[in-house]
Amino acid sequence: MEAATRSDEDKLSSALARLAAEDPSLRVEHHAETGQLVIWVMGEAHAEVALERLQRRYGVAVEQREVVIPLRECFTTPSKGHGRHVKQSGGHGQYAVCDIVVEPLPEGSGFEFVDKVVGGAVPRQFVPSVEKGVRAQMARGVRAGYPLVDVRVTLTDGKAHSVDSSDMAFQTAAALALRDAADNAGTALLEPYDEVRVLVADDLVGPVMSDLSARRGRLLGTDQVGDRCVVRAHVPQRELVRYAVDLRAATHGAGTFSRTFAHYEPMPDDLAREVAPRD
Image (cartoon, rainbow, N blue to C red; front, side):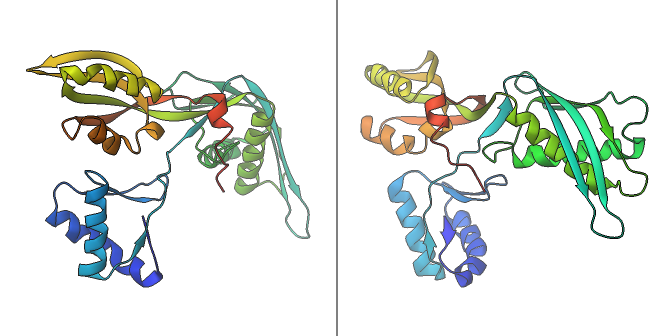
């Protein structure tokens, strides 16, 4: 949700805190990566009641927005990148050149930076600047504007100027080099998957499993819990936005589920093409 006006924005946080204190089944989240304010509720009726209370009790009007799924970018092939940042505009200029090699790493490996410069082509004091510039560009993304993950970046060569080179110049050159490497390589979008556990009556196991498969879910198995069954699956988060509503309708209110983050996986090409680049 977003506040409808600036005055509503000033009151929204305190109003939501009071609302959550009154209603333990409502949870408020400010997503650090997407910047969205999200309320977790039990369904559409619960959401309508919460929004009505915000308006009636606290005088806060909000507008609903589509939930943004936090995607990631990755390299799928090794690549080389060249970054050159040279400006001369009177007085001290800016001069930095760096060459890097980028290699994809297994999921969850994070980021590795390796310095293989020889002969002082990049002065020692500017090597951390290159790493800082690479990290900053990774956070901004290289293709669609989503954070880049699981890569090894090796600094192999570069050039400096005795007067015009600086920390910021090498940060900029490093960012340009990473973008150049992305232009010369295969990249992919990664989407988050949740592990979903659905508790339903035995006669509903088949329909629930079919529905999860239709949501691009990967079934993990079932467990018997008393006279009911738990269906476990890994499902893309973007397929779960309305799952609480759909499950309630399919099970006449008798089915429940829980979800926890599992991992990231490459998004199918046809869906990745539909993702609009972030600003």
